[in-house]
Length: 330
Ligand code: DGY
Image (cartoon, rainbow, N blue to C red):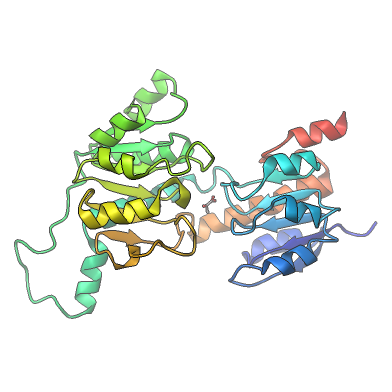
């Protein structure tokens, strides 16, 4: 039996590639930039599996171009770039990489929060520009983090890991989620539920950790900024379109909020006009899961998804739409 054919749409760690090699005929777009859409659509034609990243839209167009496709493994926990119902309709199993990046992403949300509050990036630029002429009691004053109120929007795995870290800073933790968690879990995290409006009003730092879907698109818009404290900071290491980026630029420019830390952008990799000119925002290029250890684990998990689905023919542990297999078996 010939080996199944897969397409890997981006460079990935060697170990993950090595895991796939014995099982598949591999076509690898081994580049640091996105595969051109046209090329993706032509190369997917004869493939049984796709290992992709979050810049590739797996939609009706791609599925129509891939009549043999049976499995898509996305190298990410988020799968808002994948039309899962369309995949399910066509019998394509989708897998993602949950769990392994939770702590790393929570670390990074905190990195943004601390960097924004304590003006680390501005300070670094200042030093490199040779502007530091000696200690000054009034120079680059930031905002204390300890003892403040942290509002977490989206209290899944990552939101909870962010909350755990807040305990070490003696913070009051509030959370908002479409679903309220059990009181004993709230107690475990020292977190209290608030409706979104109340959370925005009360928090010194608002950190976003919800998924992107229709209900969270532009969840943080002009009206939301109007509810926040003028001294508040917004942290987004979730998905760009959760925030109306133009409204954010306005809020940062006008002093409606004090600062922000961003890892994701509404039209990634582009930024809203004016954002990059603002001194009170820390900007990162979607790095939250970018540690050597975690990116390797994500790669191995994505590889395993394809092996389970196409070689072992069993339900992958991290299938997003396991009902595909149940339907096939019925
Ligand atoms: C994800 O996995 O969804 C992140 O955005 C990239 O790690």
